[in-house]
Image (cartoon, helix red, strand yellow):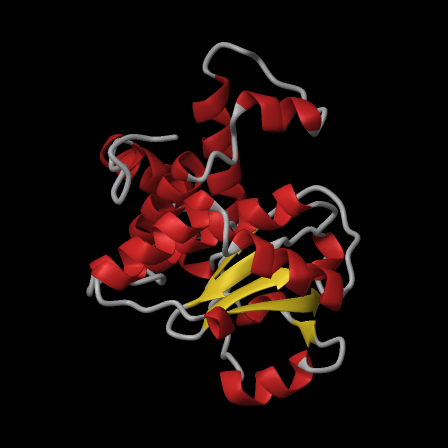
Length: 217
């Protein structure tokens, strides 16, 4: 989601949080187990919710939901919510065992919403398939961020060019993923002083782990 950003402060109960979602709710970034960083801001909660429903019909999002269901982790429509986030620069996030939020005030297009869902559903898949995944372990967090960045296409050259990002063509994708992963890990207190080593220790295994796809898109 890239996330993505992970914070491990005490979370509020999700049920009470859902009540806030009914009328232009606000979401504190600390409630997200994993969050994804975009570029700008723009849609209302209602507009974003409509885009979420459209995303759920897209081939890649449908595929990920089907794979989660096969793995025994059903992702219903209510698992994904549109919210207004307090913290700027966060596109959305996943809270372990609770669901995905999309930060409507950071969404400007259908592609933005599609990208958040693809990214965050990889985190959900990792949580589903690995019973021992621990977001407080920096290497675990780094691995899921690497996979989400790689498999969601966050760093495809076309997307980076559209964002007018300064980049080098050669080796661009891996450099972009590393940059995003490090940004996410910087928000994890358990990664303080250990983020770079964690990324290096798991990079090869996690970058080449393309499950549930046969290969990266």
